[in-house]
Length: 109
Length: 120
Image 1 (spheres, rainbow over the protein chains, first blue to last red):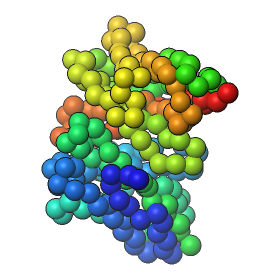
Image 2 (image 1 turned 30 degrees about the vertical axis):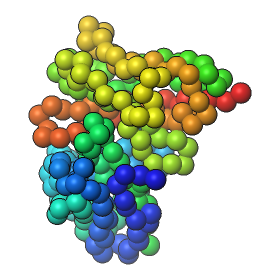
Image 3 (image 1 turned 180 degrees about the horizontal axis):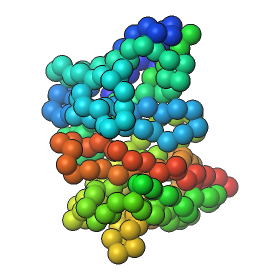
Image 4 (image 1 turned 90 degrees about the vertical axis):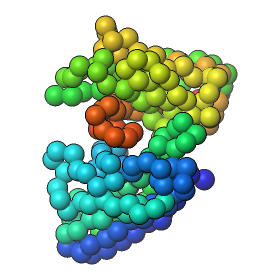
């Protein structure tokens, strides 16, 4: 059972938009920034979003992040088949640890 | 080019020990905090441990007292000493860089991972 709650799976058609939610508590999301990671099959995770809504260099603006209270959301527009991956949210917790969501598998159908 | 290369994984019996290494290149290693993150087969990501530039250290409760993180800035290397290994420690272990100029814990570069299998 992960500290942060994500839907196990989401799906959408190519070109469409999808959102992935991440729910936490006042001990984690409510008190710190959220990061999002993309993990393509068989590869290491990659940082997509940091500090709730900032994109590292090289990440397209099709990817966006937001946070409200104890929840965060990752948005992906203009979906491509290459976006099929597992997506994880993460943040610092007051227990002095980094906590991850359980991950969301995105299918582009 | 930033590179993180893990090594030291393998098959070990329950109760045994293993030492993982992460060789860093392409950046000033001593200027960054570092982390270990693991992923059990078919499962999600689990943070394991953190070490700051000044060697402040944190551990996940699941490994506290059994694992020890360390770094050698002269060798641009990060380590994870794993003792009293259990079957549930079986996972791919990633090292990940954490820039201190980010406002919170975010891992901007990851290694390719090394597989640790704990089984008799």
